[in-house]
Length: 137
Image (cartoon, rainbow, N blue to C red; front, side):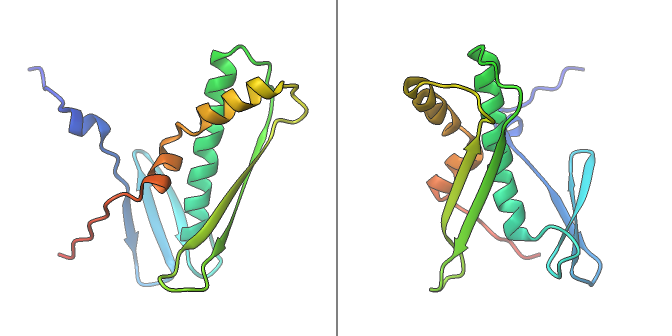
């Protein structure tokens, strides 16, 4: 039997989060689990958001490097954010810094890389202010 997969199913992402009454939240994505903790025993929810952005940027740097035959052996991405002092509580600014570890790129190539990185879906989601629906059952 052949099962047809709709475009919606192909594009859907899902994580499951569970809590057993303490400050730790078990997050399951596909076949991987990790802990998010609000009391400093694991990565915090805001840190997780920043890590998602930073790793997505990193994936796009690697894709650019491989596709453009750029000799980029290693690099690092640093993400910093500042909470707003006004309500609602949220990040008011997020900065991403990429260190290419000495790889030589001319200005044209740097601009091209920057534009390519902006295709990262996490970046685009944050820029696009997605509709978020919360349902309580």
